[in-house]
Amino acid sequence: MEERAKRYLDEVKKEYGYVPVTNQVLSCRPDIFVPSFDFGKSVFEGKSSFDPKMRHLLGLAAAAALGGEYCMKAQMKDAKDLGATEDEVIEVLEIAAYMCMTRSQSYSFREFAEQYGKEIKEIRDQ
Image (cartoon, rainbow, N blue to C red; front, side, top):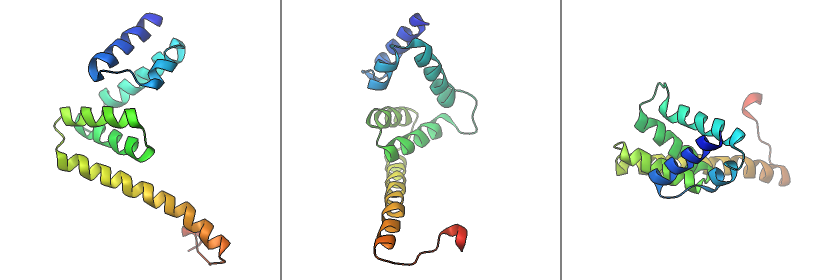
């Protein structure tokens, strides 16, 4: 398993020019790293309802929304390599940013309503 972990790290370094911190740290535990890496490969390269470009655009949206610097860089590169246009990437980033904003609003506006005595109705109560 240690040999597979090293091979995976070499693949990542060759593809992206760096090895993300998560891979560096997890590779110290090949019993965890190898299955995790295999799962990632399955998600992006296995059987799917989405074409490869769309999978990486979806990955980019998630990485951007979560603030994953390395993942965002890798997913954007992969999407671009698979033919994603500038417009597609910008649109994905705008959607991700919007979803982050609404998440922040959801929590912060509830707190505002509670502290200032504003009545709100949750969706389940409407």
